[in-house]
Amino acid sequence: MKTLLLFIIFIFPFAISAQKVQKVKQGYAQGGIISLNNDTIYASIKQENILKLQSEVKFIDGGGKKKSFKPGLINGYFFETENGRVNFESRDDIRISIFPSKNGNFVLRLSDDIYPLYYFVTTKMKNTGIESELVEIPHYLVHMDYRWYHYDTNSFKDCAKIFSENTGLVRDIESGAYSFGDFPEILDRYTQSIKGRKH
Image (cartoon, rainbow, N blue to C red; front, side, top):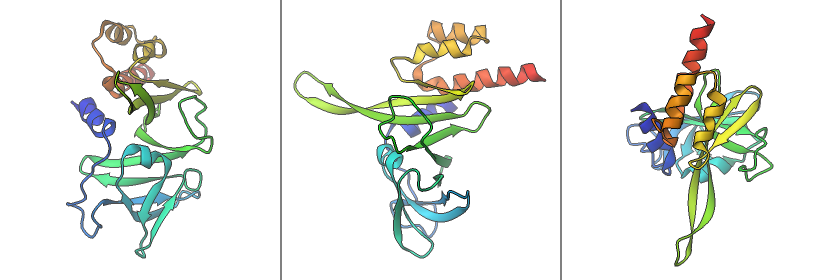
């Protein structure tokens, strides 16, 4: 159920309501900017779809001024939702082909556990037979053993290779017990098994 909730929240464009947050302008949510010195500057973060949030953060600072930052100028930002805090990190160290910008991107962090898990969306043109349309492609990214791995709906089952130490988990992945949207749950199961062996 937790995995399904994450999937619903992050696959579709952000439409987070700020109605329950006091003194926040409509279309914004309480949050903060993380400076390059890791200082937190509290601000109201503009709510946009995830593609825009990956490339730029727009916000209103404590003085009421509208500002914005591109990746690389800050360490990241966050905002509060009814389902908890949403964190975006500014990263320029993920050297894989899906990243469209050499200057880095804001990447949605889903997990702070021993294997960091991120979520990112790219786009591509799809031919529908009559005309082409732009479609969004979701990706999970995980950092393990000093390298990045990324999976989309087409490459999802390949993730079994990085979980080879847990044969039961591999069997469930390969048998279809899990789908792409379950990746956070898969990683959590693997992480818990690793922690269990260390005790």
